[in-house]
Image (tube, rainbow, N blue to C red; front, side, top):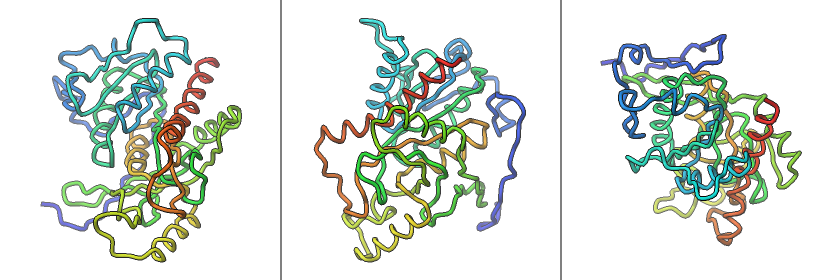
Amino acid sequence: MAAMGTETKEAENHHDDCSIRLLNPNIATMKEDVLYHFSLSTGTHDFPAMFGEVKFVCVGGSPRRMKAFSSYVAQELGLERPGVDHPNICAGTDRYAMYKVGPVLCVSHGMGIPSIAIMLHELIKLLYHAGCCNVTIIRIGTSGGIGLEPGSVVITQQAVDACFKPEFEQIVLGKRVVRSTQLDDQLAQELMRCSKELDEFPTVVGNTMCTLDFYEGQGRLDGAVCTYTEKDKQEYLRAAYAAGIRNIEMESSVFAAMCGACGLQAAVVCVTLLNRLDGDQINSPHEVLMEYQQRPQRLVGYFIKKCLTKA
C-alpha cells in the first residue's frame, strides 16, 4: 500500500485541440462503459446521437432547479414547443436528473464535493464518448456571501479551500494528490460583461471558498456542534474577505479541478442568499429566495443566447 501522507502535485496537461480529454487510459480498453449513476451505458445508448451537439453544460444542485432552468433556456433559445416537455434523460435513477435543450445539457449534482465529483466523472466521460468539442460548463447555484448584499451574484475567479488555498486535495491510493482550482478567466470576464449588459442585479468577480460542511466547515454558530465564538467566526470571515473571498459553497473546488484537468472551459456563478457577516440563518421570505435563485439562471441563459447568436 502507498505510504500515507505522501504529497503528489499533478503535472499540468496541455492540449491543442478542443476535444474532451480523459486522464484515464483504462477507458480506451473497455468494451462498454456503464455510467451507473446516470443509468446510461455506451452499450445501450448512442452517445454521439444523443449528445454530440452539446456545446454548453449547466450543472446545479437541485433536480427541480435544473428542470426549471432547462425550460427557461428552451424559451430563451426559441426551442420551446407547446405541449412538448423535455424528459429527464436519467429517469432510470434517482441520483441525478438530466435535461437536454438543443446544444444545452442541464444536469443536477446534489450537495457537496462527493456528490458533484461522482456526477462529473460520469458527465465528462459522457461528453468524451459523445465526441463533443468546444464545450463550456457552468455551475449555477446558491451560496453564502461575505461582505455582499443578499441577492448579489458572484462569478468565481478561483476556488479556494477552507484554509484559503487555491487547491483541491484528493487522497488517491493513500497519497495526497493536489489539483489546481483556477477557472477560466476569459469566461469569467465575459460573464461579467453579460451581467453589465443585463443590468438587473449586482455582480462581482471574486474567489469562492469551498467547504466540506454547511455548519462547522463554514463557521456557523447554529449547528448541533460548535466549539468557537462569534468573535472567532467574525475574525475568520473577515480574513476570508481580505483574501478576496466573496462567497462560500460546497462544490466549486472539485468542479474547477476536474474541469481543468479534462480541458473543459468552466465557470461558477452563484447567488448569495445572505451576508454571513450579519448572521448564519437564511430567513428571507420564500418568494425573495426564489427570485434570488433565478439570477444565475438569467445571467447564464443570456450568455448562452449571446454565444449562439454570434455563431
